[in-house]
Length: 120
Image (cartoon, rainbow, N blue to C red; front, top):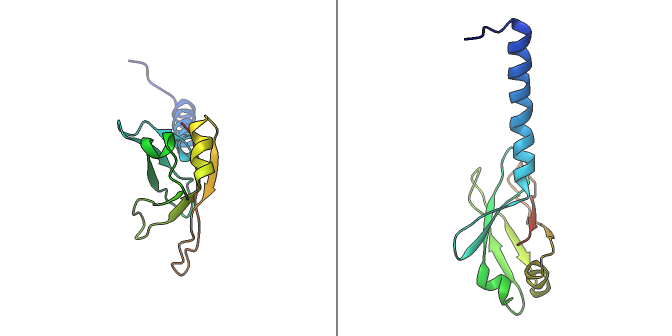
């Protein structure tokens, strides 16, 4: 087993501490795989948390006329809503990325929104 000196320990721990926030940023606007019937998305990291929202694959492939408002996951004692138009669903289905801002959380001292990047 190789013993590390203080400098090596500091560099390795520092690298890990830098990698953790970077991974959250990279995940923040992306799509997870979801289920067989949904696309799963994670919001930007704002006010010390994220939210998730699922879009039904059926809504993406056959956009609802008039669009749809989705409610995010419950985190930090609140939810948000995000509204996608019929054109937004069509753009997502065509392989484009649609950026949307959620409704505001109006909790005193924590007023904020989140960003979602929706894509197939």
